[in-house]
Length: 187
Image (tube, rainbow, N blue to C red):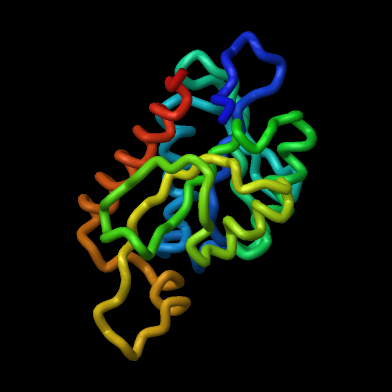
C-alpha cells in the first residue's frame, strides 16, 4: 500500500477526525476523533478552521508534510460526504487518508494504528468507504470500550459523555495524536 506523501508532493495528506456536530456531542465518546483533531491543531499551531466540504477544514504542516484536517459537520454516519469531497478537491488517494475514530472493540484508553481492512460495523468508516471507493485508508482507532450495563445500547453508550477521569481522557487523546504524527513519519 502507498504511504503518506512528502511535503514535496502537490497534494496534502488528509486527516479525517470523525465525530458529530453540535455542542451537545462535544465530550461524547463518539466525538473522540474531533478531540484528537483539535489536539493536533493545537500542537502544530494551525489557524482557525473554515467551513468547506460540509466540514470544518484546516491546513498546515506536520512532521514536514502538508496536511488537510477535516472535521465533518455531517453526522457520523454521513462522514464520507465531507471526506470524499475533500479527498477529490485535494486529489488525495485513499492510502493518504487517515481516519481518527472511536473504537468500541478496544478497551478505553487503548489506541492503535491500522492500515485498511474491515470496518468493524463503524458507520463513519462505512460512509468513508462508500465515498472514497476503497477501504485502503488508514485509521487511528481510539478505544472507548463498551458499557458494563447490558441495559445500555451501544448507540446510547457512544453518544454519552466519558465517565473516566479527565486526565485519562486527555492522556488517550494525546496518545492518539502521537499515532497520527507517527503515521506521517512512516516511509
